[in-house]
Image (cartoon, rainbow, N blue to C red):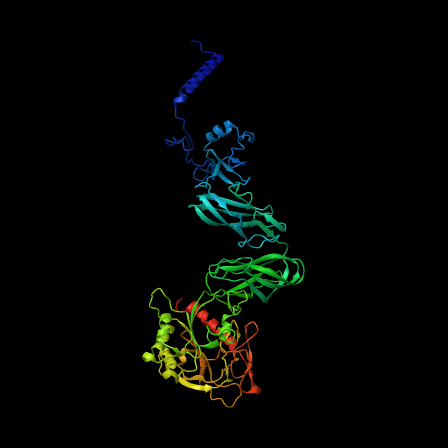
Length: 640
């Protein structure tokens, strides 16, 4: 049989291949097309494309367990467009918008960065590119531009630190993820990412990165996933020039404004005035630590050398009435100063005081005569003025002008029967109000019980042991539970000088002055003194010894003419007129002296003209009142 020649065999082969290809094409629409890469095994049922494990062909080769799928690298042009896959000229075209965009749902790429889109894997959802990690979708949020705070010091050539950030208050209308970027065009940005799971009000912290290149004012553009949040909102950042060399003169610091609990500080009224000496010009940044909710901060430029006054501004909300001791720190190139401490006084809220006594000595007495009432009622001494020495809200004064203190007077104020009523915060007793002996000294027992519960008592009394069967003295016995606590009356006359102890507390070293080792004077006559008090109950005391140089005194160093209790809120002084004054020049009566503005001053006083000394009765009674308010606020019957 004759074999076909080569041309015949080739023709037959081509014919068979064409028939086979035709058959494949004919049956392919009915086949379920699946592809497996690696493994030489069929894919899982639902997989159109499956990458299976494959042994490495060479040492160090990658397999599906050590390698991954590398998506196409692209630069997306717009979050809401399929560019660059389509010509940007098609934007708005009906076929592109309504057919091609939905048709490409599920398209996945890797964006290498740029165009205000963070680098990463993106998935087209038919309307926009979604970053793969944006599992919640984009949050719908709004901002109030005026509430954005720029924190930290920004200086040309200085890299950002953790202290450089934006505090952005936002309203989240729809929960979702956010990717906020603040651009400045000056080589630094602000970034914040995260998720909101619930709609509401939030504060976002956007931290700064980079290094400002030039000094001046930068306006921040805020975008969320590449879309500008509010084109009208451009928070300014002041970038200062190179840092100045300057010194902070701490002792000249002036605190401006009124500070109250839960009242936000106002930069227009709550600030510090600082005295500065500038050695070389440049920028400055001065800040404080945050103490109990508040801090101070200020930046600026020194354009000339020499003494200058600047302001650093308060921020935050005071959380308590405790005095805030803040420490100021400067960025002077001459060295950082951290030893400048400033006390910020917080206004003590309104208190209720029971005032018992007569004339100008009592808190409810005759203001204008020059005594305690004048000191207390002048707002420059006690009040809410910026110039007030001690900051308090005007108290409610319950004044009772009486010579006899009975339980009927005390009951409703110390032990109110209505459970909704509170006892008074402070009891002030002065001349000539004396506890009575009625009902087995019941008034003194009631007062002692009040003190034991935290009540504050100021007691100026010169009728302790002989008057009313010694009822005032028995109050001390009841309080200290010591029957031996007793003394004598009339140990000192007018013009006697008592020397105050060297002890550091608010009474002896307080807002109105340091009185340690100084003198107070006896008013008129009849000073009392204890001959014994239990030492464990006394924090400090002063004796009845007369430092006036007079030979007629009967006082001595072993007697106590004034003391502060150690375990209770009680101070006692054996002279009912220690706080009396009439504006006169007597050197044996009315030892309180005030200036024309009713501020406490010293007075030359003493029964011996040749050895008279300046007495500090006015400042002393003022400091005692400061102590009483302080104790009632932090350790009182209504605040324990």
